[in-house]
Amino acid sequence: MKTYPLDLATESADNGGMFLRYTQRVKDGKEHRYWSIVENRRGANRQVIQRQVLYLGEINDSQKAAWCRSLEVFESGSGQCHQVALFPEDRQAPELSYEVVHIRLDQLRVERPRQWGACWLACELWRQLRLDEFWREKLRPSREGTDWLDILKTLVSYRLIDPGSEWRLHRQWYHHSAMGDLLGHAGEAVELQSLYRCLDKLLAHKQGLFSFLSERWRDLFHVGHEVLLYDLTSTYFECDPPGGGKRRYGYSRDKRPDCVQVVIALVITPEGLPVAYEVMAGNTSDKTTLKTFLEKIEQQYGKAKRTWVMDRGIPTEAVLREMREASTPVSYLVGTPRGRLTKLEKDFLKQPWAQVKDSLQVKLLPRQGELYILARSQGRRQKERGMRQRRLKALWNRLHELQRQKLTRDELLLKLGAAKAEAGNTYRLIDVHVPQAQEIVSAETFTFSLRKEKLRAAIRNEGHYLLRSNMAAEDPAILWQRYIQLTEIESVFRNLKSDLAIRPVYHQKDLRIEAHIFVSFLAYCLYVTLQQRLRALAPGLTSRAVIEKMSDIQMLDVHLPTTDGRLLILPRYTQPEKDHQLLLQRLHLVLPAQPPPRISQPAETHAVGATML
Image (cartoon, rainbow, N blue to C red; front, side, top):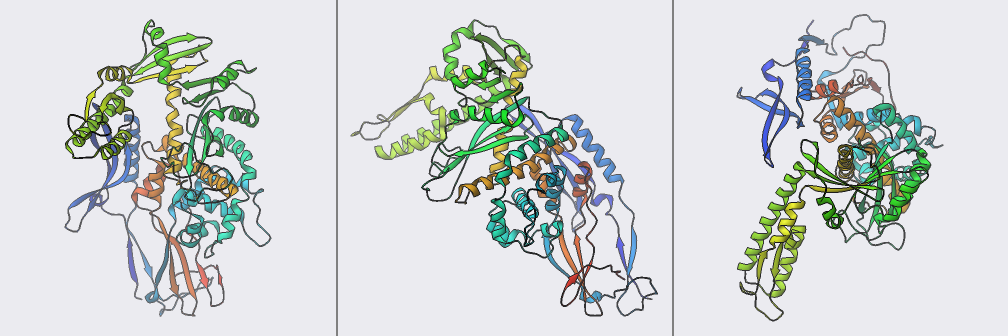
């Protein structure tokens, strides 16, 4: 009997060996090493080509050693070569105790490639958070058979993997993804109106979700609510100004003052895990939000000893006084404008510097039940000095260019305005004299010079932070570390706006607008769950890098016509490559078994047991 052997084997060592490699970069006088996992591949001319598999960024020695051990275990566990045989349809099969299906190999087809890996990862993160436990009773299927829970999973996974509009999800993304296969709705479409109607069902359960997630954060990552970070951001709309609702013009953190917006207030733990958020009108002042949020957190999680960390401009003097004088005093740590440093400069001059870390010195100044902390960071000083020097040099060169150009006074003023906007606060270090209204622009009428006193003051203040707290007994080094953790909430906002594309918003109704932000919040919960797993198990990797890497795993349908006129369909996800296997091994994840085959008949499609010969 003639057989068709098919070799299944791993590649040779010189065509798949993975190892660590780094590149060096000197930044602000300090050498940085950025690590990657690369793989040797053989090209067509037998030349070895190095392919970057994973970018890890800066990792420490212990993290590097952990990656090396994983690579050693991974490389040593390759399989052995073996063969399988396929029988054509014109051969008689042996006697078997189950149904035999003869297939026509010469008519084999591969159809409908779709993204599977990232969809599976999103469902796995959803499972780890046990969100089905929370939503199952709240989003029961409709009488018409619409499974609202599966639609919510689809909306959140879409926002996590490849965010866009609900219209795009309905028309394009769902068909080109394997969400239907993973949720048990293979071959079905998702209705646009079902997506919108699902959004309308979510907001009633927002507060309950906050409590549920707080328990999951505690169980998964052992975090509490002793320290909370609070900040605000905005997101804008591509639409005409409305007559009512929360869409309003206001201070735009997105540099889009031409667009209406809403303000989002967010509370997270120092690890970046979200605790609560609120959507407010776009013209809401930051100073008016804190008192309301303090009350909401107390109602949600009870009164307890908590420390609130905030940036300057959020708390008012009245709110800080209430926090100090409350029956259960609320601790706070807040950044202070540098204008206050000028007022306290003489008092600070009398205080000695205390070394609390290798590159951090502090001065302490008790004042009326509070403690002012003047911190001087060497690393921050080098960073601010580098930024100031680059901007000042660019501005100085630009002014020389304008001085050489032939411009009218109005043209000069316009170009100076653009230069001022680009230079920011650096512009105040230069004294610029422009021509009078009737004067011609020349080197004599348009002059500029360095304001040396202001430059000296800027140099003195570089790398300095003025903090304010009612925790006088706390270690200054701990207070500094907590304040620096505000970068975590800035990272959350960056992820929401870039990776999860929360902006711009196209919905018109306030209910849909808040539901859109709610879905983005849920997507970020999956995102930060993966981020926490990566910090512990695969340091150096980002959540976005892993999602993009897993997106390479596709699912496709192998169509095999049978001799009796039916069609054997085998849905199969592609075999993970070595980089995918390494990721799964590091994250302790196991891919599910391949979906079972199914037999398609002229009138219907149903799953049956089948044997491929």
